[in-house]
Length: 249
Image (cartoon, rainbow, N blue to C red; front, top):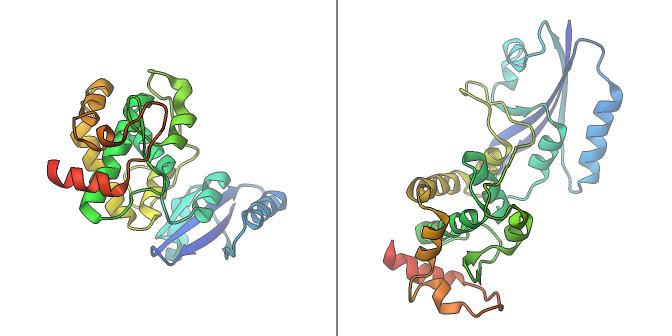
C-alpha cells in the first residue's frame, strides 16, 4: 500500500491547476505536510490549496490518475520549493525568468545571454506592443543589458553558464517532464505567446557568436547607439526599441 498526499492550487487566470505530490510506502509524515503549509503561509497572499489523500499500489503519479481522473490535468511536482515558487509567483515575467528559460534550452555565455534577452524583448515588443518582462534594458559598453541578470551571472565571465533547474513538473501525457522555467513562462500573462516568441528568437540567433550579436546591437542609428554614454547605463526605452525594430524586422 502506498499513501499519497496532493496539494492542489488552481490558477483561474490561466486556467491551470498545479500540484505538490508526496507519496510514501509508510504513513505520511505530518511534519512534511505541515512544513508545506507553513511555507505557503509565510509566502504571503491569500493562497487556497485543495488537499487530497488517497492510496494506490504504486509511488508513481500515474497511479493516482488511474485511480481518480480528477487529477489528470494537474501539472505536478514532488519538489516543495518548486511548487511554492510556482504558486506564489507574479503573472508578470521578469528578465531573470526569461533568462532561466533560455538557459534551460541551451547553455550560453553571459554576454550572449544578454543579447538574446534583448532580441527576445525587442521581437515581443514589435509583435505585441507589450513588454516581455518588467525590467528595464540599459546600454553597457558591449550592448543592451538587463542589470539584474548581469549581476547574477557576471562571475561566469566568457564561459557557458552552468544552469541546473530545481525539480521538474510532470504533465500527464507529455513525452518528458517540463522544467520549472518553462512552466513559469507559460503560466505568466500571455505566456504561450511569450514562450513562442522566445523560441523563435533562439532559432534565429542561436548560431550567432556573442561577438556577432554584440556587433548587431551596435549598428549605427540603432537603439544602443542612440543612447549609449560610457559609464552612464542609460535606459533603452520601449519607444526607441519599437521604432527601430519595426523597420529592421
